[in-house]
Structure formats: structure tokens, C-alpha cells
Image (cartoon, rainbow over all chains, first blue to last red; front, side):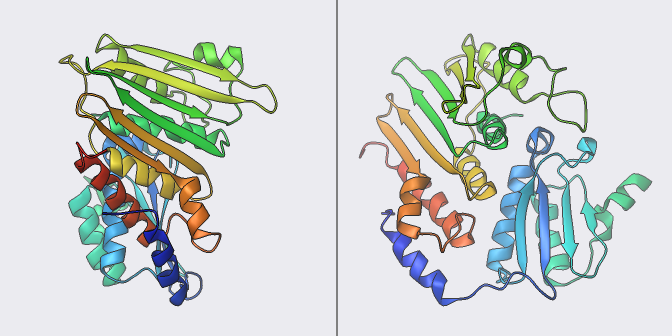
Length: 124
Length: 186
């Protein structure tokens, strides 16, 4: 049975490990979560990124955040990935499966999944 | 949007945007299957002028585009079940805020499923870790009640731990899921 008291234990555990989120190699994953994003299925995409980052022990390097309307509603769910010293990557029309691949190939492997980027999508 | 929980996420985000420090989401279902969802906040509120137009799809405060569909769709979702929609707001200093109440007849064939409400709550809280949220879901039909108050969580966690930390997100999700599973106990 989960209880509020467990939070104290989680707190103690978290204070043991210092999380470094800034600095070299830091990656920021931003998921558009306005009406347009939510309607297009951004919530499972966000959950997939959050879980993927946790399962691959990337929490010290990658942060996953939400934002409002990015302005390209027709391409939602949209995810932007900002990496220090690199150009921003914009992924469009995502779903949970595509998000999973991005976690594995881009966040873990460091290789952009070209076919899901806005540049590729516009060519179709 | 195919789930009520997605609408709730969307509408509750308005409260955050209105600068609310506390947003309460309360769902209650009576024995007849009438479900009332109210989202109450202490944000900046809306003037009467804005309030009148707020469910007009061609009115929006956003600047990226000229349509705003969040509230109109929420209203439609409720009214198409034979339910109702009501919104109250005050901009009076010191007691400003907004309350959006939607009533659904869950027996109606046009009532959308609730969907993954736990994800909605966790997403909402982790999206605004410096704001407080109170979530409650009371269902009289199967005697179930679910409750989460971030102020209680904060009391235990102190300032050192942000509510968007992964461990906290997982805990919230499990905490809520467990309450939903315990139908008879509470």
C-alpha cells in the first residue's frame, strides 16, 4: 500500500544522489502540451519520454519538460530536442512508438532519427 | 479529443496559465451516474466581457492563432450527454479565481470515456511543479474515493525535492492507481 509517508524515504534517497542537469552534454526534451498537442496525442508521447529517460538512466543528462503551443498545430504531437552546442531538432507527428525510437536512437545513441523530423515530413 | 481526462488536462492548464497557486480538480459521480467535474482555481480570473465569450471558438487569448478550442470542446463534451456547463469567475483582488463546472450523464451513449485520468494528474503536476493541486474523485456507485493534495506532499518533501522529479512522478502514479483499484476499501 502506497502512503504519503513513503515520500520521506524517496526524499532521503534522492538527496544521496546529486543530479547534474546543466553543463556539457545536457539535453532538453520539450513536448508541446497545449490543446492541439493534447488532442493529437501528446500525453502518451510525454509519458514515453519520461519513462524512457528513467529506464535508460539518463536523468543526470536529459530533462523532459512541457510547453504550450509551439505554433505548428498541424504537425502535433511536436517534440523539440535542445542539445548544448547543437542545432535544435524538431520531431513532428509523433506517437508513443516513435517516441520510444527517439529515446533509443537519439537520446541514448546520439543519432537523430531523421525520418521523424519536420524537415523530412515536409518533403512528403 | 477522445477522453474526458484529456479535456481535464487541457482546461486545468488554463488555471496554471492564469497564475493560480492552487488548482482543485474534483470529480464526483452520484448513484444515478451523473458526474460533476469542477476545476477551481485562485488565478487572475476573467472579466465579464471575457467570460461571455470564453466558449466562443473564435475567441482566444493566445497570440499564435485566432481560435481557442479548449473550453468550447469541454462544454460540448458535457452538453452532448444531456449534461450542463457553467463557468464563474471573479477578478476582484484578493479573491480572484475561476470555477468551471461540467456535468455529464455517464449513462448517455454520447459520454466520452474518462480515459487515463492518472496520467492527466501526474502530467499536470509535473508540468507545474511549483504550483499546488488538489485532486479528488468520488464515485458513489462503486464506493470509491481517490485523493491527492500536493500541499501534503510538499510538507513531507520540503523544498529540496521538486514535484517533477522522476521518482515523485512514479510515486504519484502508483499512489493514484492503487486508490483507483481499491474499490471497496475506502
